Image 1 (spheres, rainbow, N blue to C red):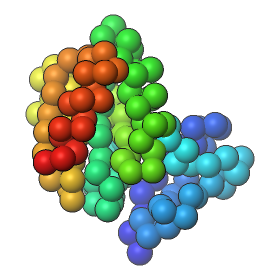
Image 2 (cartoon, helix red, strand yellow):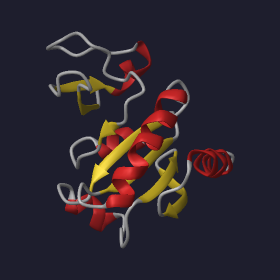
Image 3 (cartoon, helix red, strand yellow):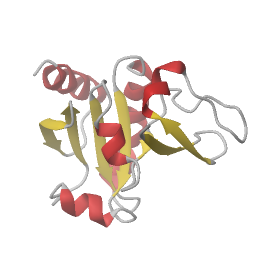
Image 4 (cartoon, rainbow, N blue to C red):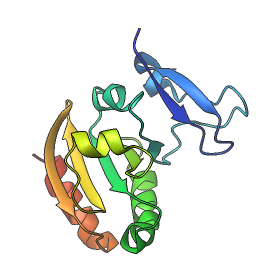
Length: 144
């Protein structure tokens, strides 16, 4: 049984989720809040491979807390994550805290948004976008 770890969006408690139970709406073991409620998952080296291997497409935001465009884009990314929570997984990777993942994915500028299907990168875009443009790009990327 393969699992991935994710932080609870309510209490920030770390939870282990079996891959095969993702579709069952897992809840936090600490506070019982929904774990995959549409909020982006915090990507780490411990959980990223498992997340990418899911049946659902994965949209990843590589960002940093000191990056003004990243901070400005975060509410848009979060809103789209909520809207598409049934069909797409959204992940945020802090490039400062997760330098190994940033290096593995050759992140040279932030924000960088990548779309993965079946564990393979299908599209990438650099820079923050307004919601309409992000939705349009995402629709095109997910159609690939």
